[in-house]
Length: 150
Image (tube, rainbow, N blue to C red):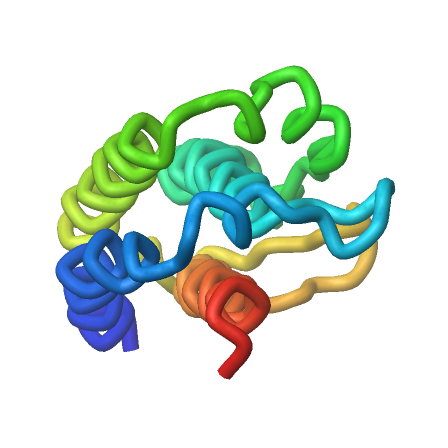
């Protein structure tokens, strides 16, 4: 399962930069509503998601079990990171970098550690580390559908 996630992430790293550059700057910056993210901000959100999930993937290997998946303030992070004002190339470079690091990290996780339980509320077990890694990819692909409309 984790190897399949690595393979998909590698494909996305190869595909996304070329694919997103086919979208006009105007469409990348357009917000569907004042309180909704632009396509550029969605990609920025995926950087924030990658940053938090990379930390989770590392910590869940040695933290007390079940590992508590700490939530983060997505809207305020997008706002304070000013993704709307950054160039697409800056955002893409950071997104590629963080996902390459995620691939390196998850490729070294032992099978027994992939079974470590995780919780999102501190009470119920949501899954295990392998599930959390797969969920990261599902979340990313959900946002790709928002960006590309497919």
